[in-house]
Image 1 (cartoon, rainbow, N blue to C red):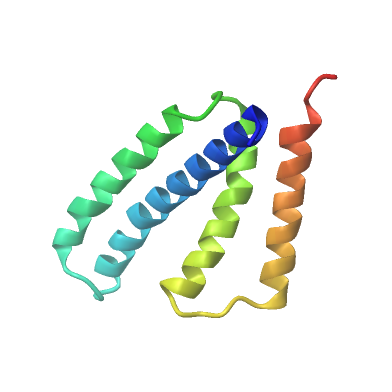
Image 2: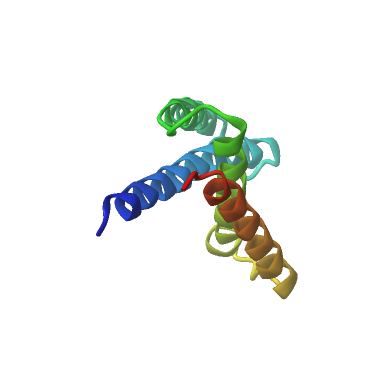
Length: 115
């Protein structure tokens, strides 16, 4: 694995971990608010959001380009969450949307490189 590939793999993993922390931090309060879970779920939700914020500080640069790329990974992770946690199968529109978002993120992330 080259250094570029390794860095890209680490960054992608960090994006996924950040997205999962954000999703957990928002999902647990939703369970409580809808009466599907107890109030104590707010404690791990708050901890998850703290982890989410901490993970944001680990991203390669705090710039709009990084967060735009993260947004696309978040969309893909949210649709995986839809399937694995909510038990709802994504539609072809979901897959096309994720593909477009990830393609756009690729253009943003890789398009700024200098030769």
